[in-house]
Amino acid sequence: MPTRILRDYLDRNEVAYRIVPHAPAFTASEVAAAAHVGGKHLVKTVMVKLDGKLAMVAVPSNLRIDFDALRETTGARAIELAHEDEFADLFPGCETGAMPPFGNLYGVHVYVAPELAREPLIAFNAGTHSELIEMSFEDFRRLVQPRMITEPLAI
Image (tube, rainbow, N blue to C red; front, side):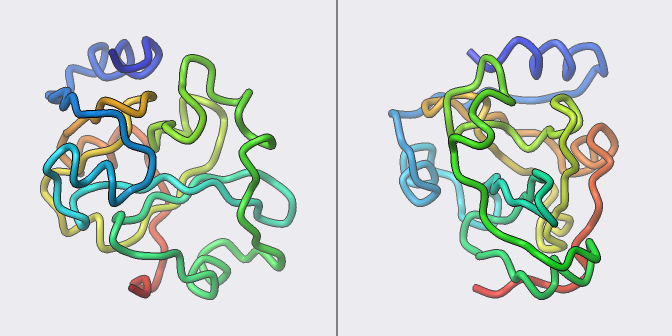
């Protein structure tokens, strides 16, 4: 079951979504295979520190973050990947590493790869390692109001 916070938020905002159960999986490629979802359609949620402050970056699971593009978008001087112990307590009800890209629900800024905006539907972890939520990118953009990364990302 998706986290109550996320499910209630989507329902309150009358968003059409679909829950996609799958065998437990922990890496983006395992999730894509288990859920039969393409890599450009599946969102990988990556936690980073921008000048020491936690932020969330949503990218297609088949791409990596381009730190130069992220630096240009954010204006941050120092960018590094966050360690799980730095953010695990920030997402109540979520399994570690399975948080949805809804940082707005948890007080975290969200940055999105421009490639995701080209996808009519996106899928992402629903707070567990065995369920995805699939919904329109436009609904995601409307609810989360993320900042778009200025440059396309590298494979």
